[in-house]
Length: 502
Image 1 (tube, rainbow, N blue to C red):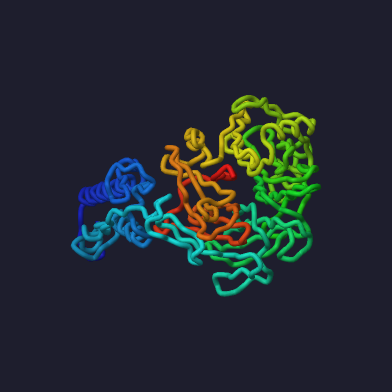
Image 2 (image 1 turned 90 degrees about the vertical axis):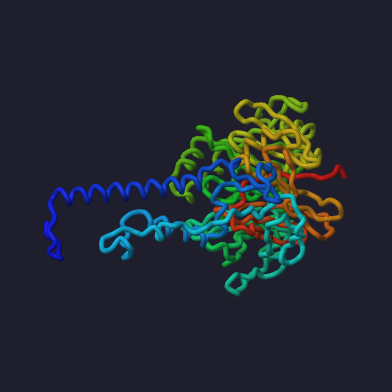
């Protein structure tokens, strides 16, 4: 074989060099794969450190995985570039000569020092505060207000919304944009006046781009009353509940492109929150009611409703909630027992008055329905498959004696289940609280002002890097992030924590 430089080699020598080239390339690829495997899959127990760096500490101030040794995204990118250089046949022009491979210097990875996670749930020793000085934050958190009742919403590019942010922000959720380029924080306005102004009931939506920057705000539903809680449907509409006599349950488009739709789920008023269970052949949908005899309602789509549910386009699935039947929760009584669904609302009302009056908040996770009774300050957990239930107090924190329930909800052993608070403590306003799988309780943030307020509207951005929460009475929405740049690890539950029996 003749090269351009007129050097001639035999076929045997050629194929020998080709074989050596393949072996060298495969070896380098395997070395890089082993390095990545050590970064990604080492067990948490192999690299836990505590607040002072001591190994084996089981507190939340631990390294969740080996990727957290990389102190920032720049270092990570530098590491990946070095791996790619080392991975096979990139001419270096150095010792390898023409046609050679990357030198050993090219294959050296950047030095990355071990880094303790900055986020320490429940630890306030650093005296961290939000940018407006209104919130006390766990170590390693940052928080900024992004909207305030009665004020125009400031965009991150310096602009402002044309309308003022709505009054008494309550239930909320994150809904991704259809094109994937950002998301909406859709939020209820819990006020009984009807109209189109910021002080009227209705629904508003803060718009974010893919970089988590605020780029818009609009009222997406008007002429509604006392919009309390709600929930997101499988087709990404927002269900908003009117908590007032004669109130209804509506579907709302977060982009404001589809007109609000009155569903068939609510006909009796005082509706509070919404959730669904679509892990069965026929999905079921649920609403709670914040009244003394407010029966929890189950909606089951009929044949026409199922035809809507099985449509491909999201906009064509809205009609699912317009065709179906209603049943009401009746439980046997006691701290544990069984339950049934009955079509007679009076039976559900009688059961609600005795065992779950003033239900607020509802979530369904893997066939388990969670809701709270504000009046009795207790959590009710329904097993929708086995038709059994249990009751637990929400005074002093939910799940005091139920770490197994937390384990079902959180993503991994290092995660925390987050939930909101109705009413403050120690002359402070309410905050965000949580529990880990070991049953340990944390206060994540707490207000510095004296107020009989409540936190609500707790939601994650799609990537989990931003946590949003509303302080309803002062009307402020906060954007909370971690200083170490990592996402929040955990789940959220739409229930309320009650600190005292007052």
